[in-house]
Length: 124
Image 1 (cartoon, rainbow, N blue to C red):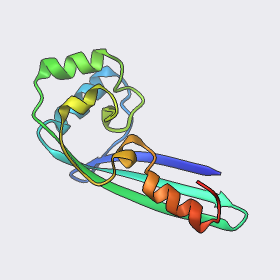
Image 2 (tube, helix red, strand yellow):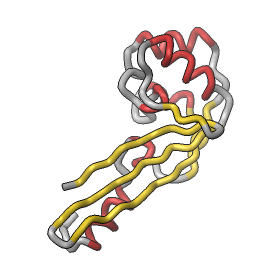
Image 3 (cartoon, rainbow, N blue to C red):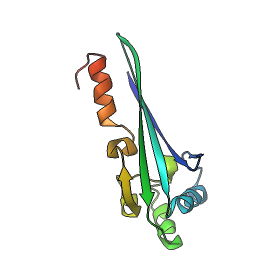
C-alpha cells in the first residue's frame, strides 16, 4: 500500500484545502508575493514493513492582483487542493520560483517514492 498527503505552510500557518471560494481567495491572497513550504509525506506498507519519507519544497508566488485571484477561484481549480492551488494547472502562472521537488508539490514526490519502493524491494 502506498499513501501520500500534501500540506502548505506559510509562516507556521498550515493551509489545508479551502472550505469554499472565499477561503480559497483568502489563502491565495496570503500566498501572493511570498514564499511558502509544501510538505508531502509518503508512506509505503509492504510485507517487509512500513517506510516513510517527507519531501519539503519552497514555492515563491509572484504578487497577484485581486482580479487574477478571482478568475482563478472562479475556475474551480483551487477547491480540493492544499493551499488552494495546483502547480500543474493554471496556478503555474503565479509561480515565480521553486526549490525542491516539483512532483512533491504536485502531491507525490517521485524521488522519495522510488527510494521507498527500492528499500521495500518493490519495483518502480
